[in-house]
Each structure stands twice: as C-alpha cells, then as structure tokens.
Image (cartoon, rainbow over all chains, first blue to last red; front, side, top):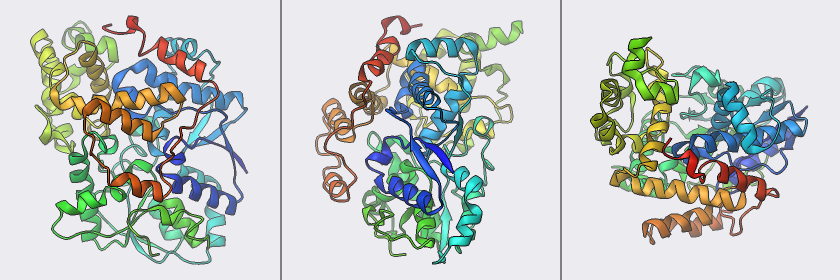
Length: 279
Length: 187
C-alpha cells in the first residue's frame, strides 16, 4: 500500500515524535509513505487570520505539488494542516477563487487529491492488520482527545461525529485499551495562542486535563501536535494553576498503537515528552 | 433578496455569509471557550453586523473579540442556521489589520502571526527558533519561556537550523502577490 505523506512543520520540529511514530507504525502495517517533494508550511492560523488569498495559496501549492508528483491520496497527520488543506480544497471549488489562486502559485491544480487524516488512514487500510499484530495489548484507561480541527467544520471535513467522535475510541478498544466517557473530547485547547496568550492556553488546557484526571484516565490520547504540545509542554505552567498537579502523559494515537504492536518506546519518540510516559 | 442584501451588506459580498439568518439563539456564545474574555461575545457581534451601521462596524474592528476567536469552529458546528462565524472573523481581522484599528489585546497575537509568516516567507517552512526570536523582538517579552527552550532542545524538539525548501523564489512570489501586495489591502 502506497500513500502520499504531508508531515507539516510541527512533525519536523517540536512534535518530532509524532512523525517518528507515524513512520514506525506505517512500516509495521505495510503502508509505504511517500513524502510530497519540496512541501511548504500550510500557513496555519497565522495565514487565515491575516490574509485570505495567502491562506488559500500556501495549501494550494502543497496540493498542486502532490498532484504533480502523481499522488492520488495524501495522509496529513497534523489536525491543523489537515483542516487547512481540506478547507482550501473546498474553497477552491469556486471557479473564481481557483483561477486567482492558480495564478498566484503558478502551478496547475485539479483539486482531485484525496486528503485524509491519520485516523482515516488507519481505518481504511490497517484495522485488520492492527488487530492481527497486537502483541502487547495497550491495557490502559485513556481519554481520547480529538480537539477542534480534526472534526470541524463537519460540513467540509465530513469526518466522524462532531460532538462525540468515535474513531479514536474504536482504535483504543482494538488495541486493548478502555476509552473513558468524558466531556472535553472536542473542546479547544487554545491552539495557536500557546506563545502569544499562554495565560488562555493554560486555562483551557488545564480544564481539559482536569476532566481527564477526574475520570481516572491514565493518559490523554491525541492526533494533533498543537493539542499535544499545549497539554504536555505547558504542563508546568498548567500545574501551577491547579490545586493538585496532574501527571497524566499525553500520547499520540500512533504511539499508543505502536506500543501495542511491540515497537520500542524509543522508536516511537516517547522519551521526547515533557510529562514522563511509563506505559 | 433585497432585504438580505440590506441586512448582510458587505459581509455577504466579501464572505458569502448571510448574517441576517442569525436569530440570536446564543448557542455560539454558550459554546465559545473564550466568550468571557471578549469585549462582546459572538452572538452580540452578529447583532452588531445586522444593524449595518458604520459605527457598529468600527466598534467590531476595534474589539478584542475578533482576535480572541480561536477559530475552533465550535460556533458554526452548533449554529442551527449553520452561519459560518469563523469565516466572518477572518474577514474582520483582515479589515481591522488593514485599517489599523487593532485592539491592544491583539498586539501579541498579531506579533506571533507576523513572526510565523516571516519564517515561512524566508524558508518555506516554519522555523520555530526564528519564530520565537521574531516574536520576542516584536513584543519585548525576552524572558518568556526561557525555561522551556533548553528542555525542548534536549528532547530533540528544536531544530537550531531552519529547513529550507528549494523553490523559495516561487514561494516568495506567493507573498508578493498576496499579503505583501498593497492592492489586496483595504479592499
């Protein structure tokens, strides 16, 4: 199975372990990932907060490069990149916008690429294989945290249930874990305000962690580098605001699956987390 | 249609979103995680837009509301009329920025966005060290997160050198034709 791959900037920097774990489990599940050549940043929140044409052109260049490389389907592990690419493809169905943007990027663009997130990739191509290859069941009680951009806006992404998504929960059950029933599955962590308004991120992420802790989750499972870094790297500041510190680790879904497949914690980048992972 | 145009005016023209559909149920505000921090919540912003007056539009562009919107899309997800408020927020931010009507609360947020885009413009990809340096230079928050950086580095989460894409010229042109183009501003 061959599939296109857009890692995005976080996976090459502050969320390197997400990249490592995606690559490790893809290999174990016989999925060959072909990286888009010379890809650029999707523009994230910065671009769409400042200039609409820029916010469409940056993702359009990525999609055009993938098309030029002959890729039919691309997996985008970062929820924020996934959202930007999907929204761009949707917006560029409008002829006027498409003409304008293709003129800006100076590249042909058909808009026919299939864009999927990491959960969709696993759901489509690997569920049987995961079940077959689980050697060390991930027997933990966990809170599956989807965040915002993986499921919203539903009208465009068409992925999972918008208020109570289930795909990650099903995967956790498949590898032997128990997802807890909790209230913050899709509540925002503060996302891109991590540096500019840390105070707000600390409050929002603290609420999320508090609910996970109150439901006795042993870990929070995520599929977005932004959620992961806000809940993990900001834990020191978050704990300063809580009555009792929370030491629940935050794992990427690919790391949880990797552990169940018997892949070493080192290969999955578990040592890179700020909050120690002992699972 | 005449009435829709009257009530939704420029917003409809620029974003395709019809603000006249809002009947003030307040679900967007109830689900907004930062509503309490805002000068006025999203449902009130919708009401201000419906009035179509220049004074109210000015009040919106000068508010912190538009900058505190995280674009988490919860409001549109829950809106019974499926009104795309985040899309309106994007448009209002761009207007507030171009017309230089920024609320003081927005300064660090805009500084972050600008540093972020600077990094992409130069290298094609986000260079986190450069982003933070740019942000600190813009906000004078020199000591922020100094404890975080060494640990990030030790955990292998920080690249000291940027990753450069090959076609930086083509990428630079995207900026020249969009955000750096004076013609696209104040439209």
